[in-house]
Length: 127
Image 1: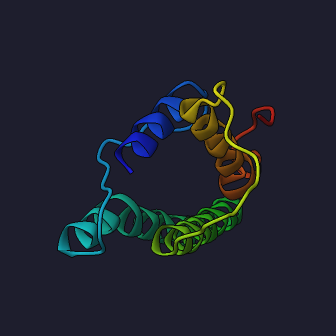
Image 2 (image 1 turned 135 degrees about the vertical axis):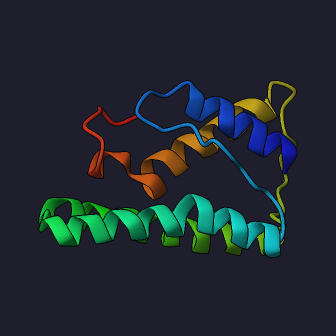
Image 3 (image 1 turned 180 degrees about the vertical axis):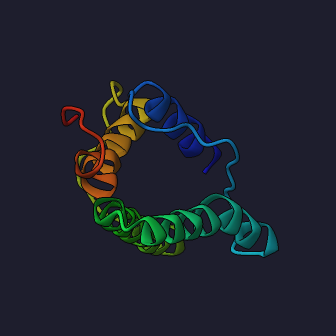
C-alpha cells in the first residue's frame, strides 16, 4: 500500500491540473479517516454548495455534483479492491523485464482517465 501511495502521488504530481492534497490518509475507516474526509471533502464541498446556491450559480452546482459523484465512485471502487483478494492463475511467468513501478503508473493512468475523469471539470487534454 505504501508503494502504491508513493508511486500514485508521484504520478499525479507529474500531471498538471490535479491539485496536490495538503493532507493524505491511507488506512482503515477509523476516527482519523472520518476527520480527514470531513476536513478535506465534506466540509469544503458543503460550503461551496451553500455559496453556489445562495449566489444561484447553477454551473458550479452541477460541477460540485460531478465532484461528489466522482469521490463516491472512487471510494466505492477502491474499497472493493482493497477488501478483496484476487488470485489469477497463469501458465506464464512474469518476465524479468516486468517493472512494478511501471505497472503502478499504468494503474494510475487508468484511475486518472476512468475514475477521476478530469476532462469533466478541467479543460486539459486526456492522458
